[in-house]
Each structure stands twice: as C-alpha cells, then as structure tokens.
Length: 160
Image (tube, rainbow, N blue to C red; front, side, top):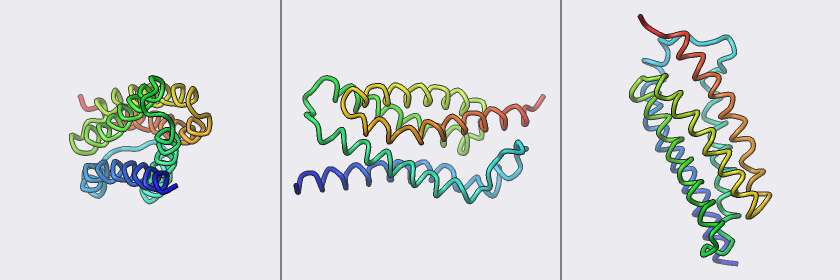
C-alpha cells in the first residue's frame, strides 16, 4: 500500500514537474513575443492554457501511476514507459521551440511527432491497462487542437 502511494505521488509530481519545465520556456514570451503574433479567431484566451495543462499533466501522472503498478520487468511495460518518456520529451521540446526559439514552424514539426508519440503511448498503454490509455485521450484531444492552432499561427505569421 505504501509503495503504491509513493508511486502515485512520484508519477503525478514527475508529470507536473515536466509541465513546470515547459512553462519555464513559455512564460517569458507570453506578454512579449507571443502577444505580437497574429492568431486565428479560435485561439483561446491565454488564461485557459495553465489550468488545462495542469489537469492534463495530472491525468498523465495518474496514467503513469497505473503503469508503474505493473511488473516493471515486463517487456510491454518497458515499451510503454519508453513511449511515455519520449512523448514527455517532445512536449517540453514544443515549448522550447515555439516560445523560447520563437519558431512556430519547428514547433509544428515537433507537435506532429508529439501527436504520433501520444498515440503510440495510448496504444501501448492499452495493452497493459485500459484505464491508463483512456486517461491520455483528453491529452491527445488537446494536442490535436494545439496542432491546428500551431499550424494556423505559423501560417498567419510567415514572413517573406
């Protein structure tokens, strides 16, 4: 029981920490560079992003916890954890590319790969724990929307 509490706390704090790392690249650009960009009509207000990402990283943490409860020596579990780590890396990379490097194009390429990595993670997690895979569906949905948003921002701000 104590081991499960530790795994739960680790998984949620780990995922939230990844979110904080991404925000280190994001926050300084919000009122500066990002404010100057042309955005599509469907762009949400800035205040919505933080609570959405906090909720999504929490769901990712719970999903990760469900996988960590399984036999970590199992080949499928190892593959699932690798896919999960890769998608987290791509998630932070997106923030770095978009907000820190001010490159909506490179960020768009990254988010396409991120979308695939999340999908692969869901497929792999489904083999291990269906609930863990379902918990990642809101994340995939949001990243699908973010992909369209990223593409639209890139297209609206292409400079000759």
